[in-house]
Length: 76
Image (cartoon, rainbow, N blue to C red):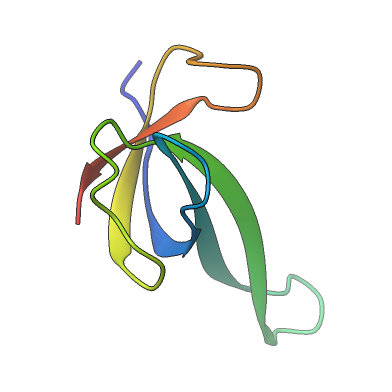
């Protein structure tokens, strides 16, 4: 099964080798037919601490790196 890739914005880089990425998705509500915005935060592994708040990044699923990290940053 292929690994999922998501795109989002870095909201925090306070921790060592970790960034928090806000991923927003839009979908049409099944009953109301209105476009709904839904967002979720993911903790991703950033090996060299290269990304800063506000950067657009792509993250990919990986094996668990820690208790909360199951994603890694692949590109900016």
